Image 1 (tube, rainbow, N blue to C red):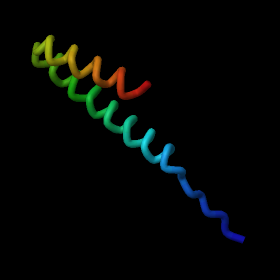
Image 2 (image 1 turned 45 degrees about the vertical axis):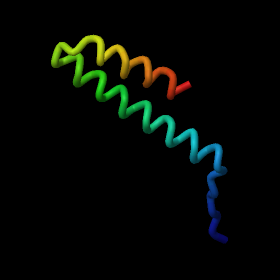
Image 3 (image 1 turned 90 degrees about the vertical axis):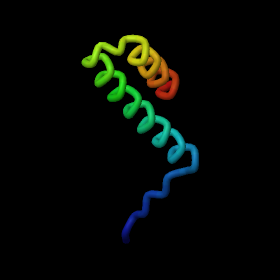
Length: 52
């Protein structure tokens, strides 16, 4: 018997939010390296909000 894992819509949505948060975090790191501190702070805050 083959088992099939079906994600609920809430699991799909939470996965999408976490992917968005990780993208924001990567952008924040890149901006920090370029000394764009305000923009880096903004994206860091967005990552924190999206991951919770």
